Length: 405
Ligand code: ATP
Ligand code: MG
Image (tube, rainbow, N blue to C red; front, side, top):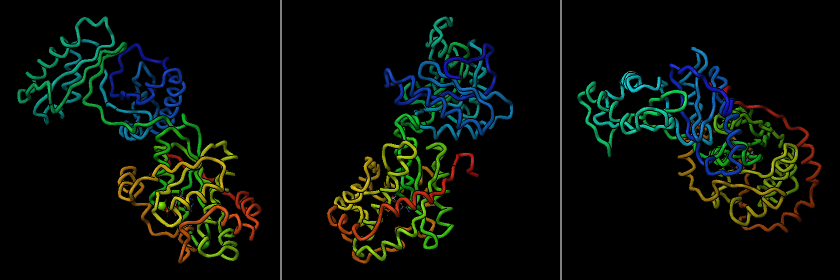
């Protein structure tokens, strides 16, 4: 798949050219990053038919191998793969000056008709091609200007740039590339456990850490019957919605009712949320231990609620041994919402189901707690036994992008 396969005959159909993003800066590690990216791409393409993906220099070629491949589906899917900085839908053609013109005028016909100005730009990787880049651009540009007399040539600010690429095995024609998802391939940064509630912040936090190359194991704390089956289904749907970016994931549904009821009996009310969050971090650490994850991700944002003051965050993270990543810590709600809309989680996040955090909310939560205060409160109950019991009761549910309708 990688670096090896190609057709000798020119593939006469539409295909995709993808540009690798930050990976190209990776020096000695580049091979590993590239292999992970190719694996992620293949998995993402599988539901849309049989495709072949291979890389040359910093371009990845994706070709459909069957007539009934779903190109539109694959195109949308590829736009969400981290590690890709730009994508072009292209038409392959023979490496011949007139074939380039024919391909451009048929494949980009709609865009050539709609634009007012254009230019042709050529990249030539195959140095044995008999024309220089400038000569080929001028030749094809001249024929296009004749065929579309309304078009003006504008080399500085054209509305449409017709790209010609003379590659080793074929020629390619495409319009300007669209932006890709950016970031680093999921998995290249290791694995982390992400705490997913039903709110707006945590799906965005997951997306942001996956973008930096982390593979995620999701954890949700579920307090049936205080929180409903619908609330659980909502969280699973959020996990599915981010899976086109994050890849397939496991959601660990942790039974949390007994812990919350025990806290209500044994924890002073102002400390209730903090004690509960320490339980969450401990159980997240246990899940991380089981799956080989080295960090914990939350959607906490400084000052958003009483449990997210600097002192409260310090008390919370004291309960776990792994580092806590909080990618939205410095973001306003508006900024978080903008990303939630962009990745498609907003509408689901605002559905009105209760989360376990909102079930027993203290009237006067402690905003400047200390670790010592919490440690003393925790003398009142056997948190280790309760963590163990909750951990053993975990239900694990797989989510995959293919499950989205
Ligand atoms: P979100 O932060 O996702 O919008 P929220 O604001 O209701 O939800 P907070 O009470 O702010 O949640 O909790 C802060 C973080 O703690 C969440 O972003 C999430 O990472 C984690 N968290 C809260 N509740 C749960 C839960 N029931 N299951 C898993 N993680 C949770
Ligand atoms: Mg929040």
